[in-house]
Image 1 (cartoon, chains in turn red, green):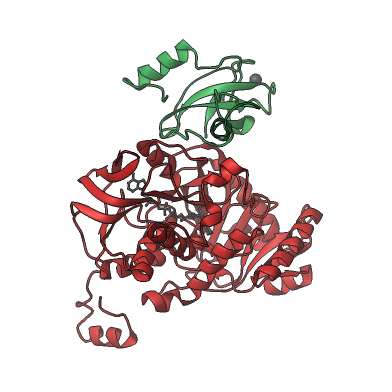
Image 2: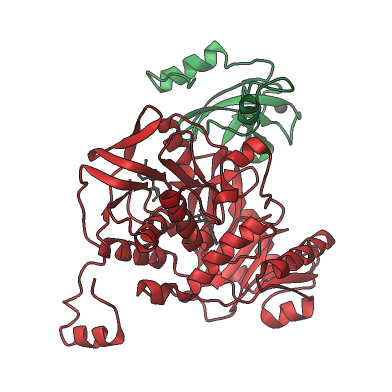
Length: 414
Length: 107
Ligand SMILES: Cc1cc2nc3c(=O)[nH]c(=O)nc-3n(C[C@H](O)[C@H](O)[C@H](O)COP(=O)(O)OP(=O)(O)OC[C@H]3O[C@@H](n4cnc5c(N)ncnc54)[C@H](O)[C@@H]3O)c2cc1C
Ligand SMILES: [Zn+2]
């Protein structure tokens, strides 16, 4: 792998930039791998990366039915925060957030992590109490957050109307080191590093069947033929139930559409991320100047990557109340992703009823922020059979009624 | 935007008139069942990629619960039927097979 640097840019400039190599190699499947990861989204690629980097497991293939990063990883609104309520959540999300701090250096790939600060608005008394509780929990967990009053909210984000009328801003949960990152770059950076370790990233290769013998996985069938493996990691977000069905078990997950939209680019007007959970909308400004907006999920199961129009309408209506200046902005693009939602709104990183099959799913509306922490924990789970980051997120929590309830804390999708 | 017809009052409306209620025809397990049965009843979902049967309520209308047969890949609605059944009626299965030759319900 050729290192990216200022020196390399200067050197290539002499050559009219004709000398840059592909970031990752094209690969054809081998007959057998130690580990096959299904799904080249952020979580699949990060899982493979840490298998190689932390555990020296490099005979790994990452199979992707479409193109790398074309699932939810390339469709999300890129909010990164770790201000969750429950201890196991804080542990994995804060691990992820802290890895984002040095990711560009670690991967030698600019992921444009921008810890510009994230605020979650409290617009009802109930939310004020809820966020004060979360701020207290975060203090014990070592996650830096703070409950701030309306005057400070206005100071941090002057374009906001904090007076109401329907939902005045009563304060906010503020995480100063939360922010955003370039979603594609996260996938590309991990892919480049995986390829450099000798792993095979195989695109346009859909897994169509899972083969097991005597309760142990032996391989997968794909559109590029059968491939054997010792261990299999299913990391396919909205398609996890479909993959699990191929292997003969069910998951406590439902797949629904979540949408986002961006406006035409405008001059810098907002340098924090704002989430308004009561009115279901969140917004940040990209480096290109577009306002990046997300809202709520559809209530019914869906695999189409298209959501219902009325959600966009509701989201935009709410945000225009909160940010009057966006009322005349044109919206440029709108899209949807299929997100994998669990009952307690927490992910599943787990062994499964089939020996050798591991599943990483259930990140639902908010897994972009978790990519490095999830990959770190998942790699350890696959290599060693358990990990302090993932142990609480096993499938057995549903049998035992031991939920990691983030449904209140994460009232909105992001 | 889904368009559904309420099998009780006969009104055809957009999805905003209805409330989605999740997987249909779940078999209820209560006290006396095994842990696995109880867990599966509460949490495990088919989440089909394709034909699905689900519950809906005519929330902004007559208020009644009913069932719909729908495809999660095309959003095509094959039909709706009343709530007082434990499995999809023959006409609904026929309507699905007409559009999806060879389709068989999942076990
Ligand atoms: C509109 C929207 C906004 C969001 N906003 C945020 C946000 O602001 N912050 C945040 O933290 N999270 C957000 N999320 C959630 C976040 O995007 C996801 O949780 C995360 O990207 C999931 O990553 P993944 O790698 O698990 O899945 P994906 O990126 O979806 O990757 C799974 C891959 O598996 C592949 N696949 C599926 N089936 C097969 C098969 N049979 N064979 C081979 N490959 C297969 C798919 O093609 C896909 O590329 C948002 C999501 C959406 C849709
Ligand atoms: Zn009705």
